[in-house]
Image 1 (cartoon, rainbow, N blue to C red):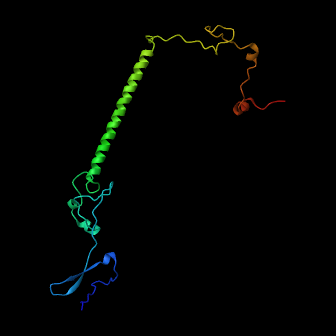
Image 2: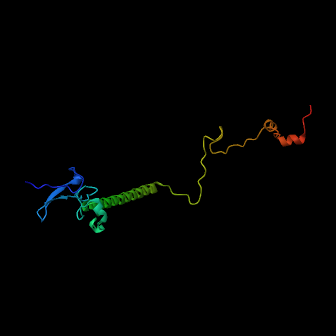
Length: 180
């Protein structure tokens, strides 16, 4: 007849956290050993492949492990694999090169535009202002376009129609009340 085995813990259900293994001791007895969950190896953040050189452990065990067992001595070691780091370096280098090429092309284009504009420009007056151009819209009718506009004077009627200054409250008080 098969020897009976008793659980060592009160938990009796067959779950992931309660896996058991029956082991025969040197005394010939059958005993239950509880199997712990296996730890997972960290994966690359970009390509999701397993990272090399890092121990697989459960979170509680990882907290007590030394730092040298949890990462690789490289930039992004322990979070991104070596191929993805290489791709990032190459990509950033190519982006910087592209920026430099764009800057050089812009400089060449602006130099070429300046060269074309420089050949089209007329020679500058050396310290002299050019004479003012007459504006045909502002000249009075009948006068030639180059002639200055005549000055207008106020007529006698307009001068006599000038309004007297307004009286304020303080000036009314000085003069006194109006008589009828």
